[in-house]
Image (cartoon, rainbow, N blue to C red):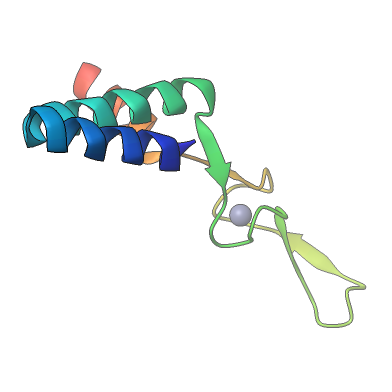
Length: 83
Ligand SMILES: [Zn+2]
């Protein structure tokens, strides 16, 4: 998805200028964040827990509280700017 947006932005930038290309990329990223606001937790790789090597015991990931998900940068920035 973001690859398509990036290519479209580069084409628009080459044809109509870099500012319009950046606007296309930003609009594409905003649309992607609206449809998919969550991403995989980078600490536990989306598993939501950390296991001992023998996998008999585990604990919840403290970073994502065991959900395995984190909010993407776009929604966090939007919420911060909109108050
Ligand atoms: Zn996690």
